[in-house]
Each structure stands twice: as C-alpha cells, then as structure tokens.
Amino acid sequence: MLQHLTQALFPLLSLIVLGAVLGRKTDFFDGKALSGLVTTVGIPALLLHSVLSMELDIVQMGNLVGLTLAWLVVMALITAAVLKLAGLPVRSYLPALVHPNTGNTGIPVCLALFGPQSIGLAMVISSVIQVSHFTLGIGCLSGRFSLKALLKNGPVLALLAGAGLLAFDADLPVPVMTTLDMLGAITVPIMLMQLGSSIANLKLSGARDMVRPVAFSVYRPLGGLALAWVLLLVWPLDGLQAQVFLVQCAMPVAVMSYVLAVRYQGPSKDIALMIPLSLAVSLGITIAFALA
Image (cartoon, rainbow, N blue to C red; front, side):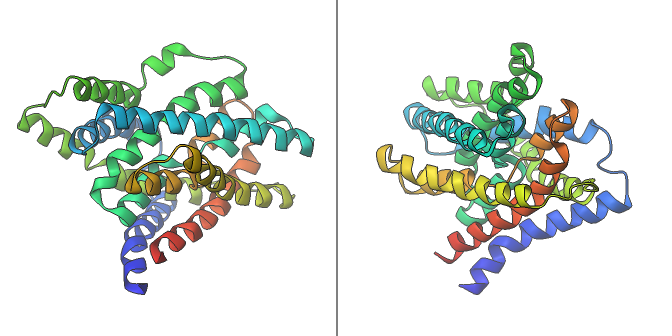
C-alpha cells in the first residue's frame, strides 16, 4: 500500500518541486508565452484526444457535464451563504472558494490514482470549471461577463468538437490522433511545473490574519468533496466516473483564481496564501484515496 501511494504521488510532487526550483532560479515561466502554449495548444489537444479515446458516449459525457454544472451551482449558493454569514464580500471570495484546481493539479492526480483511462473524464470536468472561470469568476470580480473571451477559449472549443464527433460516431484519422497525442503530452508536466513556480513566487507579505485563509483552505477541498458525495447519492455515476468526480471536486484553490484576483483587485494576498494551504489538504485527501 505504501509503495502504491509513493508511486502515485512521487511524479506529481517531483514536478511541482522542480517547477518551484526553476521558478526561483530561472525565467522559464516568466511571461505569457508558455502559459499561452499550454492553453491554446496543449490542453485542447489533450482534451480532444482524451475525449475521443475514452469509452464514453455523448450521453455519458453530457451526464458528467450536467453533474459538474449542478455541483458548481449548489457550491456557489452554499458558499455565498457562508460568506454572507461571515460578513465577507461575496463577489471577492466566491470564485476562489468555488473553483477547484482541476487542471494543473486535478488532472495529474487523477492520472496518478486511476491511470490514463481517467484523463478524459478529468478533462471534461476541468473544461466545465474553465468555462466557469470565464463566467462566474470574471463576472464576480469585474462585474461584467465576456462572451467573446469564452468563445475564444481553446478547451471549450475542443470540448464542443469532441462532443460533436462523439454525437456522430466519427473517428479522426490515426495520424491526426497521433499528432493530438504528441501535442497533449506536453501539457501535464508543464502545468505541474507552472503550479510549483506560481506557489514559489507568491508574495505573501502583509497576510497577517491567518485565520481566514486557513479556514477557507480547509473549506475549499473538504466542502467540495462533501457536496460531490451528496450529489452522487441523487445523481449516481459509474465507478471510475464517480471517483474522478470526487477527486476533482476536492482539489485546492485554483491558481487562476489568484491571477484573476490580481487582475481585478480582489483579495489576492488571502488567495495566494490559500493556494499552498489548500493544496496540503487536497494532498491529504489524495493520500486517503490512494490508501482506499
């Protein structure tokens, strides 16, 4: 059991640590070029290849998307109520507490725990969360919604393309699938190293009040996991789909939430502190899954 746990987590943690070291010592992750490559090429290619490779028809895919949307709505309502009771600004903290890091943490975790067959499922969930970042996230922090930005989102377009091909039971030529596989292969390692670099370079000076970030860091993964478990009681999924859904909903605060908070003058220091703290909680949940 210990060997299985080590094998599952070692690649994930090693790449995060490597990213942290490189982020401190080099300028590899500076600027938008590498992030743009992953967002516009790597993630869409990985998503499209994974969706077309997994044994999931359009109905099952729609079921997973529907459950993820239901989880987002209920999680947002519960979180808004919690923030109101705490006397905190709902629009400032809601996106960070609702959106899990299903991309550069959730996808590699699912890969480590459940194998390659889980990547497509994890990517479908992650794509829904990305759409929410561009709607709920930006809408809350900026007070406006950008449909143009959503329609330019590569993962969203890849998800729609995959759904269309599944609906018509169409297969892409083998050379095209091989190309998508090669392009998608760059994604997970880069996302993990970017996460490590982001954590290593967070500016935490001035975050004196630890109570709120610590409490929110526990709430994000545990609250998401608890709600996912409850929803699965009334909206059941098959074994692997349910496991991937639970893990994805238990992921830490997304780095994207920090990026948006900086851009729109949100509580960026609190969110910066929540990222590594909630990551520790999520890794604890991951260990529990690995030991189960």
